[in-house]
Length: 141
Image (cartoon, rainbow, N blue to C red):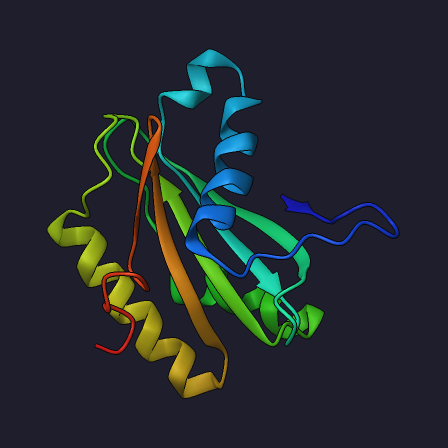
C-alpha cells in the first residue's frame, strides 16, 4: 500500500528521529492485533529529503517479515524518488538489529548502489526507542 502526503503537505525526513516519528505514528494508528507484527516501510524522498510517498511493503509475523529488493525499489523507480529511507518495527520493544536485519540492510544497500538509488537510513522502530543504521555508520557496508 502506498501512502502519499496530502496535496501541499511537505514532510521532510532529514534525521533518523523524524523517520522514527513518521513510521511510529503509522504503526500506532494500526489495530492492536497488527501492531504486534513486523512491518517494513520504504519512504521515497526528493533531493531535498521531502517525502514523495511511503510504501508499506510487507506485514509479517510477530518475529519477522520477508523483504525483497525488487519490492523495496519498485516504487522508487516508478515514482522517481532520488533516495529512500527504510524502516521496520520490532514488536518486542528492543530496537537493536538482529543478524538477519543486518544482512537484509547490507543486501538492500548493495542493490541500491547497483540501480543508483541511495538509502539514506534504515530505522528500526521499537516501543519508544529506535535504532538508525545511518547514525551507527552501517550504510556503507
